[in-house]
Amino acid sequence: MSETILILGACGQIGTELTQKLRSIYGADNVIASDIREGDAEMMNSGPFEIIDATNQEQILSVVQKHKVTQVYLMAAMLSATAEKYPLKGWDLNMTSLLAVLELAKEKHIQKIYWPSSMAAFGPTSPKMNTPQQTIMEPSTVYGISKVAGEHWCNYYHDKYGVDVRSIRYPGIISWKTLPGGGTTDYAVDIYFDALKKGTFECFLSENTRLPMMYMDDAINATIQLMQADEENIKTRTSYNLAAISFTPAEIATEIKKYIPEFTITYNPDFRQAIADSWPQVIDDSAARKDWGWRHKFDLASMTKDIITNLQAKTE
Ligand code: AKB
Image 1 (cartoon, rainbow, N blue to C red):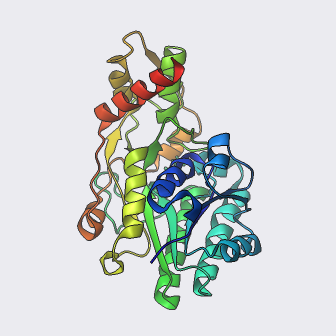
Image 2 (image 1 turned 180 degrees about the vertical axis):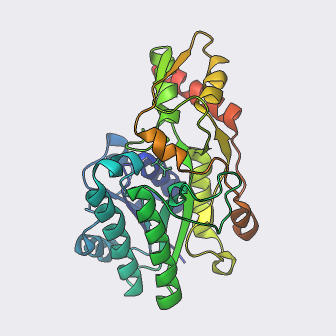
């Protein structure tokens, strides 16, 4: 069956690259990008685009009906650091948008939903090493609370109404095409830009803060692979743990120095340190590997090489 896909939050860090990849697979006309405001020229010119406030169920429904949408990827969200500053706004955006698309699926307007959860769904009482798929989940951030609640809503709509909703607990996602905004793992993106531009970087996390991370290419492949998996292979309807690499600011700096020997890093931890300290260090994603065949491709060395090569080529 042919698919028509709507991406909510298409202009964000993951949405931008997800839109490009889905357009290359399903055809540009079959992937409708949307966001609360217009995107850059590439986004606006590469296929259909609609202005949608992801918390407005009526707006979503009218675009779903206009384009006969079958699948929705809900990528609009307020990330951990920003949501700590605006707790109720974070909760409202993250929850209202999810409940809006779950309701549309319940009413059979759409057939399949993708919704990202995060490692932020874990908290200080979760095991930090090899954090299991199922374990204690008592997050200490608003973002994390919205992710745990969202996971349970997904599971509830699946069990109660048969909604085909699929989800991944993303680690920190590292990209060079579109910058993230408002996350605690953003340092691992900013560091590459500052290394190339200024030769130095002030890190808002301390040198030995180990966090699970993943290169964007792997994250996009995992997302699409999960959405394309046969329904009988999806055994988890809360959200799947997903992992690739775990590193500290000191380790990423060492890797960057292989390309930019004069690069220096300083540490000035701020409020984001407490958020990072509440999260896992290494995640066990064996359920995703077993159920739908997830494998990551990039480690810290290959990711760094790819990012630096691409950023250098862009500035030449
Ligand atoms: C954040 O730092 O808030 C996000 C996440 C881990 O979900 N990148």
